Image 1 (cartoon, rainbow, N blue to C red):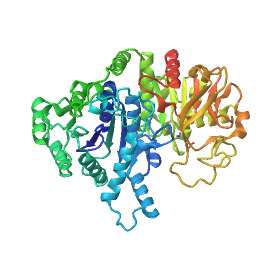
Image 2: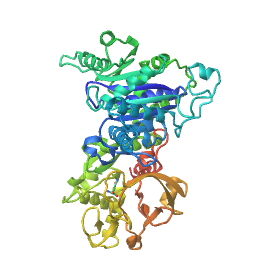
Image 3: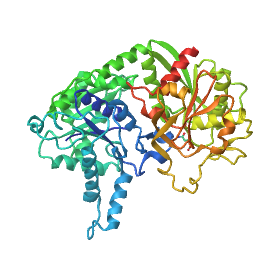
Length: 559
Ligand code: GLN
């Protein structure tokens, strides 16, 4: 097992996750199997209880883990299926250490950050690295292509990955990340060979008002890293424009790395281009060489996808309105944004997004001005009452004006409420998540009451959905049973299903028992499709999510 550790300097928000995902992709292109781990130094056990305003989207994995959005980048860039063990937080580590202490595992010892916390971190990383991962090609050449072991044709030391990619969240110097940096320092020290560990440091090279590139922040952050006993092997420099040669030389000299190891990562309008930019800078070759790995295969799928994406941006234009609560913070809906891109590439069109703040659609005189320049309306997931009536207004508008509509999770629940109010004449129908109502069409199911903990108690992750014959759902998926990811607490109230299913409204997908409604559609509408699940989490650049693709197709037709 080889390890690549990615740290960040100067400030957060530099795109460390995308950089990590891109490095993973480049190594995957060379035939290596990568297991990525994201370390989040916050004390929360997981991202599930975090506000998307502060933290961006909560990404949901197949196993139901609610994780940092960087795991979404990993899954999309490397096309793997990750699990909860791939996101390690301080909360998880401390909880494990404290549980052990209570059991008496450390009997007699004073439990300390070093060695107890760091040991726990090291053990977790090693354990996760060794665990087989879904979506990986089973290596025939052995686990470590570049070591004697593989060339001897000996059994690989595990059936999982060749390279473990560990991204340490936060910025070097943060108090919270110290135990993790110390743990990886120890891990490197414990390896006999020099070609096992590699450190990549992602920093910022800012410009002055006179357009001069400044290296001092990078020098300082590398100094901070070296004070902790870590010498970066590669420095990825984020900046507005490509680094000048003399700037690279300066960074190389002050930070004690080779000039080829100073990688210029200028801003780009398209995150999917980042692997290609980094490839061009020679990062993959440098890393492979340092880890003594040789390419096993050559994979051009990614480059072809990026080329198709460029072409599709020149293609037909459509505009989709996204009506949300965090519309000003697009990171809150990251996977939806990406899923639309994937679908647009597949259809060769250019899908533009129009972000609309839901509250702005309340109490206004007619919605034409908001929607007359869009071909589709999407209402994403959400929580809480703010903006609810605005979203319902948008759904009513889409239904009545026959505008293609995609509702996801909360968007599905609100579509059900809208249909209940307007089609089934259930006045004041609502969700008990928000208020008391004479018609609780969205409610907790029996047995769900009394859940007190907020963290990790929703219906989360992969569940089967059974699709009714001869429906839009069947046409979209081309099959009768699918698996999609979920994240919700509330459900369509079974007591109201019969009343709501009229005038073309049908629940075309349910769980196996038929009690949980999963898909709602409206016959006779060009495209009205709402899902209790979140199809966006399974969309990949080369494998668009079927509902997203069908939605954009309908938008193209509308145009
Ligand atoms: N708030 C709704 C629920 O808990 C929907 C959740 C969501 O959109 N992710 O069921």
